[in-house]
Length: 78
Image 1: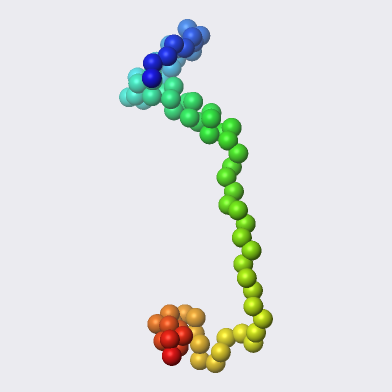
Image 2 (image 1 turned 180 degrees about the horizontal axis):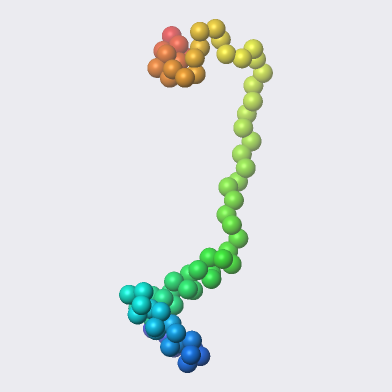
């Protein structure tokens, strides 16, 4: 999209020089700057907390090893 923006002449010269040294366009530099400013304004997204179910019991059964998933699956199937 094309638009007109009025910039301070010294700022424009510095931005053009920076873009040239960085090997990018003035448009890309302005877009990156706007994205950075807008990203700082958005609140950090937090994951909704989930309540995990808990169960009463006597713990693991004898012979169950949570480090051996194959044996655990065999025990659950049998």
